[in-house]
Length: 239
Image (cartoon, rainbow, N blue to C red; front, side, top):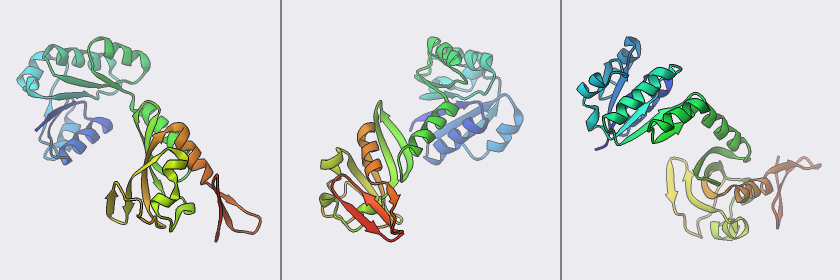
């Protein structure tokens, strides 16, 4: 089982520690302050109050045995950098470090952090991307330019079999799963009939996804009905 050590137990660090522990991993949480350590005590594998910049302290905690270290120290750039250096020198295989700005991120990268994350910027970008797709609930970038989107099924596809919807042929995107109530249908067959209330998970590149959601967006018609417009058909539904 993989072991994770989280350094800095603010909102970000404690959330990661709890999420990893809930998934069954061994998680050590470390913070120089007593309060966050007490708050996590008993909720993760172990929570310790310690100076994360002291390599002797880290070695005594057995950090060499951990697979991943997450440096989530807040606005104290010096402590963040010194902790990362200490972890690198102790030979931790993979170090993820939180940066508060680009310069901080460059420093962390140069001293050996394997992955740099910018939580605030990443969240802002994620929200902006989600808002760009009508019906989208959540979007995740799989790799540059390609996303998986969790979205409400556009009304234009209610009652239509997946194969007949032409989603893949027309837009080049793939429905990889459908959530219906509490059930998940992974790799749904072509004859699966899409239903009102379905949540779909679609994969594609950004231009394809934008085209799909744009062409299936709802627009108010003069007759008081919602007109669902796609490239090849137009369907009226009660508004």
